[in-house]
Image (cartoon, rainbow, N blue to C red; front, side, top):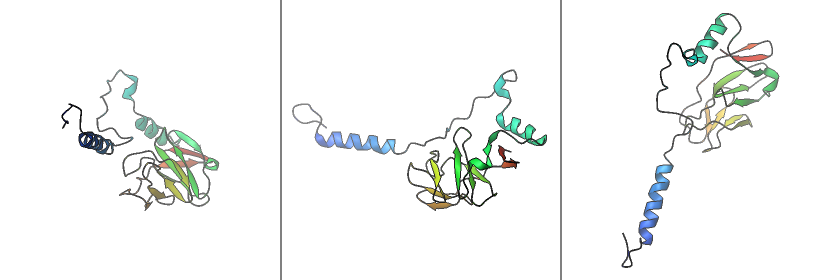
Length: 157
């Protein structure tokens, strides 16, 4: 759409900008839809972190260390972004772990405060005790993750 001078009309510009904003609003954060490339038998990537954690757990040591119980406040929690996990301590000595990827649009949750795990992308909140949706647009609870407590140390299982 253009007017007699060849310039785009105001309506065409607004419609074009609106369509671009609409498409941008459909972005998924933190998740890839592409499958990971296959690892060759002779590459270091052939051994997965899950396999390492599993082998370590079978030997009694558990998987990768996340931190200590004393690092996780009672009634709150801590986000471990690199491992995509959030660990909570709803009551003294009770340790729970969940995926840190919000079930709404795939953002990583930002923090744990006020008894909820909070995603600041769109305002979803999840309960520290069970990962259930406490508010916001998230359609499902955060998936639970396996951890083991060895003394004061929290490890991935």
